[in-house]
View 1: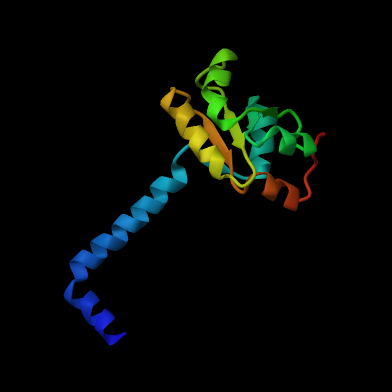
View 2: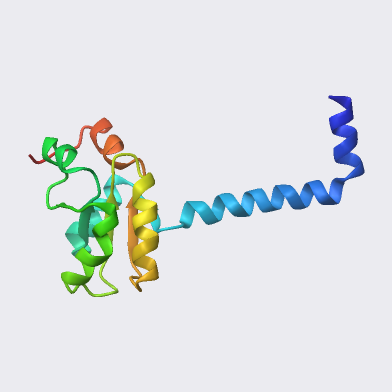
Length: 137
């Protein structure tokens, strides 16, 4: 352990740069694909700003229970589906999946297509269900 601290002291500038890069990477990855929102913000976006909600889970998971008003889309088809619906590039689009990880990839795809207002529900449907919020079937 002493040799580790000695290494840090002797290479303080390089070690500091490494920590800064790791911190920057974490921030970049957390914002990738869209801003993270919680269930309360999701509800507000749908009710007040007429946001469009896409559920990226499988059809079987979707049919077992989903957020009211959600449309089921497979992540690999999201760009074609959104473009076919003629959705404005400024309209709020909310993505939800099982845990929140697939939504980031789909959000990145939409951002590359020019959509500006992408939101991802942190924790996905697992968080929604853990909070006891209502599901439609």
